[in-house]
Image (tube, rainbow, N blue to C red):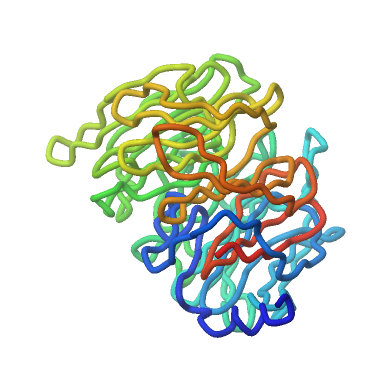
Length: 404
């Protein structure tokens, strides 16, 4: 049966893609064309591939799996076969980035694949556009040389948001270049906005209003227009202590509504964009409901599912109401942390212990359906899911496992 898996995968490569950070909708949920997961069987291995360092997770688009990692002094972007893991093309550039805390010297930002290009953001601040077909360099932009992007605690980590022909990034640059937009075709700087330092969260489009982008910078919430970078809303939301980060990406939880969350006694809450009034107002905000350290939760039917608590002291999977923040259930097991993907009525959760949990999406109770060890320990990159296969990585390898 295992020998047949590559053949089975190749029959419907374009059934669904996972082309950017947090998937097709940038909210941790799969495309509507993905079939439901039934049964409680464990995931079955398809292939494994050795990798270099980095926290950047994979993406899947146009019949390829794309991954960024580091070997020696090179940042490498590879296109892989979804069915075998074999390299289709490989692009590399030299980097001198060193992590200040000695955690990991590889890339953090998940690539984005849009209109035949792969957009990457390296930890040293280099933004690249590559041809998705052959890996040839289309353009590059040095955020350090051009706008003075600082290294921060853990290097540059914002995953590119591509919208309306622009690549949007929170880079924390000088002279009002906290958030920048680059022309997706040429790499030229289009606009810059805010004086905020860079956080570790990616930008998202406002649900129901694609003309507005939302960012969770180191300082707090920022809403800007995609067209010109006009700042529509700007509100502090961060810890009092300096040794803290905002890392969970803003999450859509209904038209005009976004959930923001951080640890370090910040808490989480829902804000609503009132387009007609151009106001961003708080619906609710509280600590100890769903305080997300680095992992972005997922939302479904007025409920949020995610990891609550600091990675260092242990996190627990929770379900809370997105209407008022009330806690519906908490998993009994404590883990360092993990990331989530929603496939219809199932959660695929990759923990820092290297386990894949399949959990039922239900606010009534925690319902763990299966557990499979798929990776090594203590890694926190986000996985990708396409056509029934989960692609995930740790500090040494990438693995593909068939879930459906």
